[in-house]
Image (cartoon, rainbow, N blue to C red):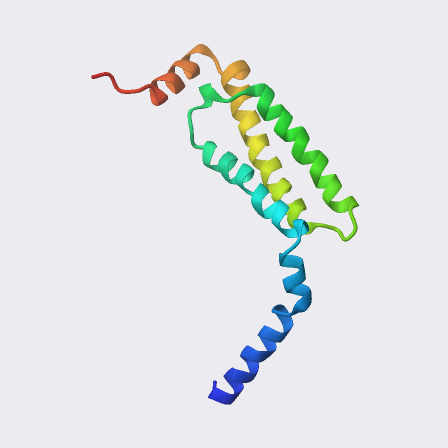
Length: 126
């Protein structure tokens, strides 16, 4: 691409995405609320690889309901907050995964499976 064409393309992108409206949006709670809230689904995804014996069933259930409610809320507000919706969609999926792991370990696994899980996650003795 020639240098003048590259400059024109760069200017076009900047004018399209970096403008007063975009900057106004970035400085609102409509943007920063969901961005700061993304810590919850990130932690939940990270926890999917941890010991299933320490999952809190009540807390996981509360987070499933919380994310479902806020997904609906994100679509009900004006203007629609797709960033908030996406945050809670990711959290809903991660919490449902945690819920499955909790139910499987506590109610569905037989004793041999539980023993294997406990051995996998036990700390090595010194």
